[in-house]
Amino acid sequence: MTGAQILLVEDNEKNMKLFRDVLRAAGYETLEATTGGRAVELAIAHEPDLVLMDVQLPELDGVEALGLLRADERTASIPVLALTAQAMHGDRERFLAAGFDGYVSKPVDIVALVDTVNVVLKSRGT
Image (cartoon, rainbow, N blue to C red; front, side, top):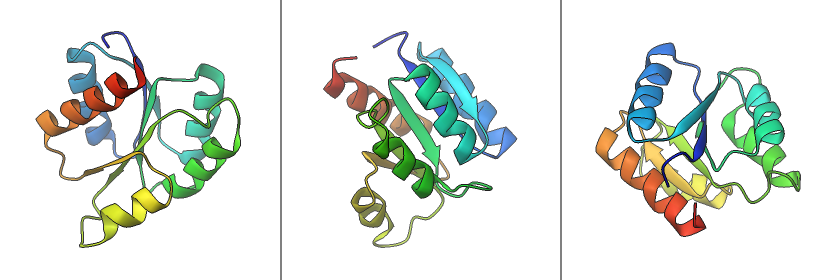
């Protein structure tokens, strides 16, 4: 799994740095986007192994960006994990029903984040 490429989509600079540092320390390469639109562009251009997508983003939110990724044959099968502070009862199920492959709530448990990424990538054979 080491060397797999992960597209981080997060509009909070401190969160982005934390996720980048943690994922790189775990051996992953990262691409970064701060908007849903830019995430779609990067995903199409680079076809990463996984997308870690904040749900609340400026311009184009994570759910809308996910829809565009699923509609494009180049990115339709890339797993996308929802990254969100929306952690009320039913939110996880709502995001999974929207098409996300997994759900990571904020504040993020770093060990759980890396474990989730590892499981998703392992299931893909990456």
